[in-house]
Picture: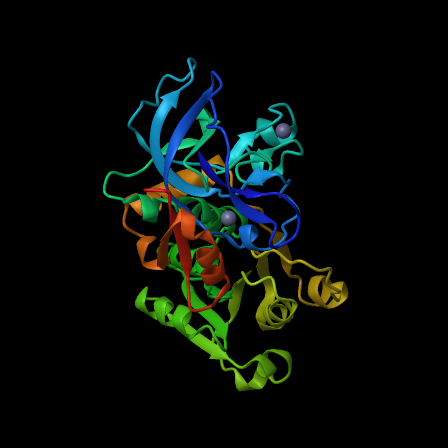
Length: 343
Ligand SMILES: [Zn+2]
Ligand SMILES: [Zn+2]
């Protein structure tokens, strides 16, 4: 079958190869891929990716085969999947279903062959049925949406009426904004030059307040930016050090700062200012766990989150190069690859 293989740690060490179709183990499900979204972690050298491996972890498809121990999932089911492919099952985190923290966890599309392919296999516990009204392209966004419910509902414990400042209007920031809004928070989303298309989508999604700020203002003159609210919670989704410092300046004393984006370089912080003078809570957020998926599916079921509107481009898997190029541009939002009719 055709599969997009990352064969080295370099950004461009990726090619479409012919590899054998995977065979499900007794506790696994084999899925025919319909749609798989491109994630930032697919684009750049991400430390958790262990080449050679088939990329792709934001996916939806149809079950075509089940192992003998699989009882409640049937051939023909429309499904999406958690990215957890292997866990130790013994550590304190596994006991608590916090698989995202298990030291021995292996992830789909990072250390186990993923879903930029015609088929993949995954443990039955990771499979979720897709709500019947939802198409495969939208359903491929359940994984990033689950990362967003983890950040907003499980890590920040965002409350109704609180003011949430979201830095970075990429796909993840826009999902966090929708979850925050669904909880009844007042949502402010901030982007910089080049983010116009993403900010206009934020407007279209009904986000309360939208700001575009100049890069120079981020670093220098904060007085130019009038946000007439006490910021209770900051979700930093860009991974940019400038944005982190900006968020830490804007947040109220005693607020919660959630680092939701991946920061690729070490950062120097003034702990006395942040933790003593401002009494901030600095909170991490790493991917998702089973409870985050349950929350994500409930939100979509209730129509509180729109996944399809985030998809700006749909291409066949064979055009992955073009898809990856688009995913790096700010004029695209979510780019999804379809595995139909591969040649
Ligand atoms: Zn991802
Ligand atoms: Zn474990």
